[in-house]
Image (cartoon, rainbow, N blue to C red; front, side):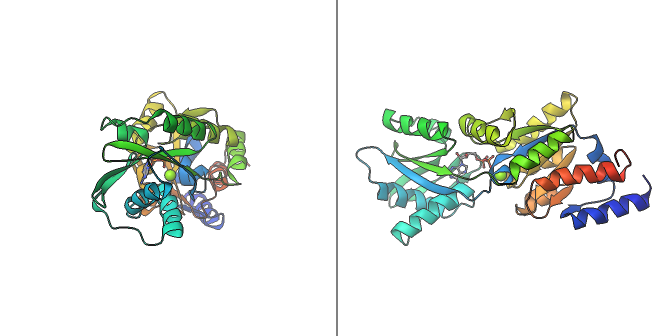
Amino acid sequence: ATPTALMAGTGRGAQLGILIKGPQVLETTRRIDTIALDKTGTITTGHMTLLHIHTTPATTQNDALRLAGALEHHSEHPIAQAITTHATTHLGTLPTPQNFTSLPGLGVHGTVEGHAVLVGRERLLAQREIHLPVELARAKAAAEAAGRTAITVAWDGEARAVLEVADAVKDTSAEAIRRLRALGLTPILLTGDNEAVARAVAAEVGIDEVYAQVMPEDKGGLVKRLQAEGRSVAMVGDGVNDAAALAQADLGLAMGTGTDAAIEASDLTLVRGDLRAAADAIRLSRRTLGTIR
Ligand code: ADP
Ligand code: MG
């Protein structure tokens, strides 16, 4: 394509809500055959709600909520926001934690009211030899089978609660996936969340290929593996944890509603955070480069 055509394509992109880093990006876009999509904040709204608090018999819901909320108040994860909002609404001001630590892809820990508290996925607890009692394991399994994320809460060396959080699929996601398929692309779901939740969301939007429980540092490696299989991979994401995968991909697309880290690592930004614009971007590049009318 001529430089003029590429510049015109870039301008048309801006009208469609697609910011393109440079005209050469359109050339790469044309070759893409696989599109990997992050779950939280990309396919789903990223606005999570705390739906249920399951506790052991010796634990009150208020204690679990207060200790977990105190820590999550200092995390920016969408799960943390759901827990914090629920906690402040029901309990008011939360205690201030000491030694707050965030472990990306796992959860948070710190000291609250003299207790060593852990909030996050089961693996975070398992790393410290803390295991879920049977009633909490059952609540967790039921939540996950329903497509919800189960967050475990432990303090003083014992698992005491499971918090059920959920997030809605954006109403444009299923249509976006259909359009991407119509362009001949294979959609893939890539998430740090567990297998059951990932499968439930994938089924809802029409994705068959799912990679769940992928740690933030492994997302880029997974894209590399797909490339090694000979695939030309686009990646769509919104989080700090997606930045490496966005940079590794042949084409990185950031949600404009996402973090600066994701936007900086990407070639394209979908300004309105609408996944349908990903399909628009691919159509636009093919049209600009004369592959389709
Ligand atoms: P995603 O790919 O869905 O954006 P992440 O890689 O950020 O997910 O996190 C993976 C999992 O780690 C989450 O599903 C959750 O179980 C746990 N986790 C991460 N951060 C937190 C947090 N601040 N509080 C509780 N759990 C967390
Ligand atoms: Mg995300």
